[in-house]
Image 1 (cartoon, one colour):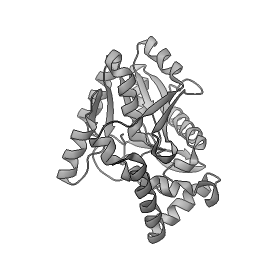
Image 2 (image 1 turned 90 degrees about the vertical axis):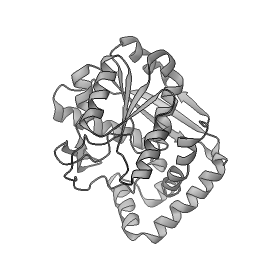
Image 3 (image 1 turned 120 degrees about the horizontal axis):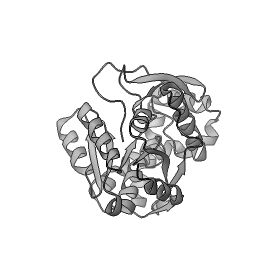
Image 4 (image 1 turned 45 degrees about the vertical axis):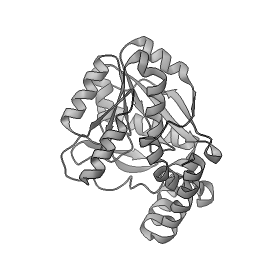
Length: 272
């Protein structure tokens, strides 16, 4: 199906959920208000949440849509350093496309990008996700100790990994740190990967263009080198995520339960 049609259907679905689900609507409005946004400022994010769901079949099973890249100079500089790259992206725009765009541009020369994901609870969906996310130039690994080890090995080979650092990790695998002025349980994995391997940390987010014309992936460096102290590094990453989100708040998932209590389960804490 054309991407524009999928996005149109998704936008309608996003608004339907917003109207029918009081819990989702209240969380959306509360999270946006914490960041200083009125509903009028971020109302477009309602439709973009639905677009995110509707575009997944195309991204997982179809031909890759067009995606332009901006800010690639910092990526080329990181590759030249030869220590691997930790790409961090928030729940903003089409984060699935971020990894695909990186793989398409650099995997032939630099090796695949390894992305961490949380497997679905339903066996059939877990199999689909595993198959769909292992696209050319991409290696998807689950949120397990084995998956983390694969990411560390990839970085030590000078390759890239990708994470969603604003995803709530399981209990015991994160720290409480401010996020838009409120304490949020935040993964430590992103900071630990960089600290243990010396990899360069870069920020990326992928915005949807209008009328289904594709995407634009935007890259940037951290404002300052990641601190050696873990707690300080986690705070830095949260601040960096805030800055990225403010570049395009109309495409952020404000309805995500960012401030929920962590679940007590085995895992690694968050993934792409």
